[in-house]
Length: 463
Image 1 (spheres, rainbow, N blue to C red):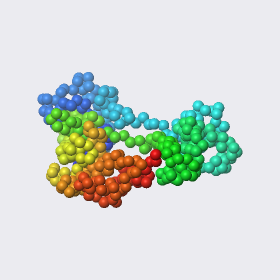
Image 2: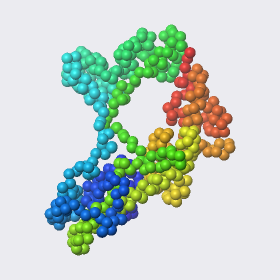
Image 3: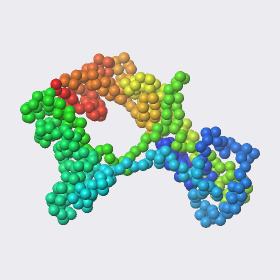
Image 4: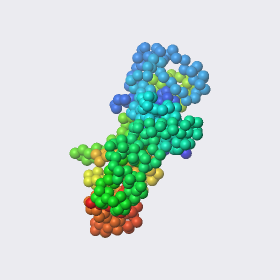
């Protein structure tokens, strides 16, 4: 494959943010490329010599003083970063701040958050160095990774000092942090939130496994209370956070989603708009085209600018081709999945890459690259484009349902079940069969697990 073809393939795979980054790199390496924030900026390829706007006298004078030959020879005609003389970097300059960069303010990690509180509690912490060591050793869930004895030996400090320091950190936010295990984490939260109750504390200490298995009857019998009271306490305990560090994260874990395509409903139907807000239109600078015309063909300047102009022209065409391909694929998806956009998840239809590829007369790999890592914003929410491609099942009436549609039906069935007598997977199979959808119990169990819905024994509630 030629370098140009490889570039075109990569561009098709890029989502909006990746394309933005790539364009910024190209702007730095190719001086003949320029940005246009205006939608009606004419492409330099379409301009004749007479149509090109003259360069302002002051700017032209500054440019003429620049020794291009010396500049190019010094860099051996490599890819260069070039800012035009007099360029301040303002306005729509190359150093503009993108939407993605604006959103890159990182939240505090759990360790940073606790260290900030430690700085405000200097008078309360028995030893700042020991406290800092303990905080840095916590895992991402907020739990201790070493015992007090191990910390005492590691830092050569009394065990009592370590215990006092741990107790101090356990008073910090978030509640439950710096616990040794799940039971201690929950008990710390109950104490902080004023939920302390002797029976509830006993259940946490002795019956967490039964609680996880929803064995409310076993718990009620063990602590000598009614099943209704045991259910009430279990519901209360389940409102607590088993991983206090969950709301915090490392900066590298932060992921931003910027929709690549926006689908809007209008009186005329659904309108598809590519999100080009973060990818301003590129055009070839008329100024460098004029320089090329005035330089001898055998000069280094002419060879350099010819290469840069060809590269810029190919990039512009490749981006236009990428955008058109993505538009065509999304257009086919919207037409095929119109019932989904009109009526919801249950109406999602099975769709394969091959079906779209055949309709657009392209290869399946082209469709795969066009949807890879890209998101669609619609009146029904933001979805990854892959969401609309899935296998499915045929109903008795010949109509097909996508697997996501089946999941939505299962979820709807379970939302209407009697919590005191939850439906088994076989009952769900029977209810789907009544709608003409025949699938196995194993498939129902698989979909239920994927959706994070527990088995019937763990969904049962006691009155």
